[in-house]
Length: 79
Image (tube, rainbow, N blue to C red; front, side, top):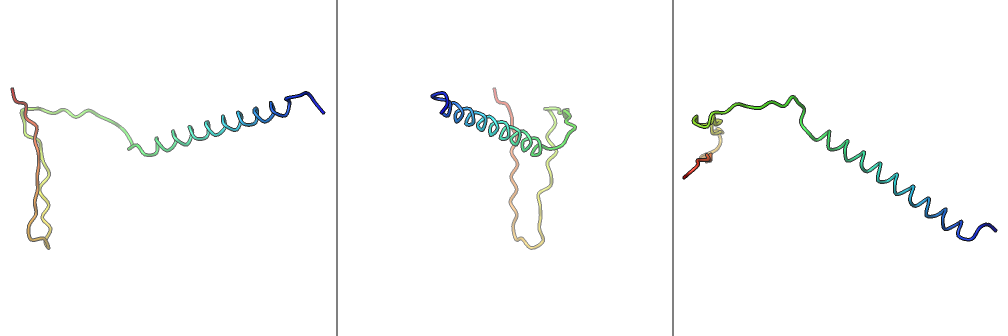
């Protein structure tokens, strides 16, 4: 017949191996999908001067629209 509990140990070993495989595959897919979602490099710092107003894009003016509303916000520090 076999050693008592041998079947139970074999089942648990299979469950643990299956769980480890699922975790490894899910982790690999997560890393692969995370890398593919990020924009390409190179990444650089932009030098800004806080005393200058920012260059804002012009407000869009479609030909068919009667009125166009644009809103830009700026941050100012108050003491």
